[in-house]
Length: 116
Image 1 (cartoon, helix red, strand yellow):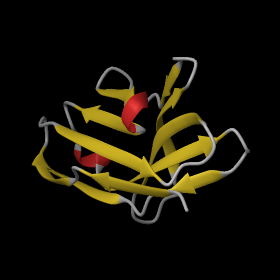
Image 2 (spheres, helix red, strand yellow):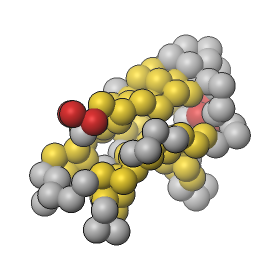
Image 3 (cartoon, one colour):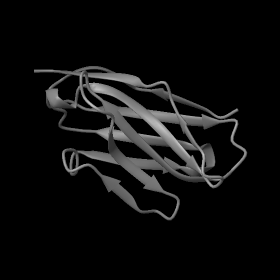
């Protein structure tokens, strides 16, 4: 059974930085993509950043230039470096992996709180 475990969330002041990590285990199929999503209170879950196996990345307009996604393929781990954090970045951040069999797996999430 695939497990995704996020870490690195916490409380930070506006303008600060955090680095999230997500490690995948129990993988049978190859990973097509790994990404980060977030869900703020009362809002829908949204894509933050996506890293595909071919090397391409996508970012939400709201985080482009501040956040950087990276992957360690050997460790099946994806990272999200978050700089210049804003109060509106406050949310639960979820990791998601998409596999070559078409299935997705989600982590349980890690809370990021940015104080003003």
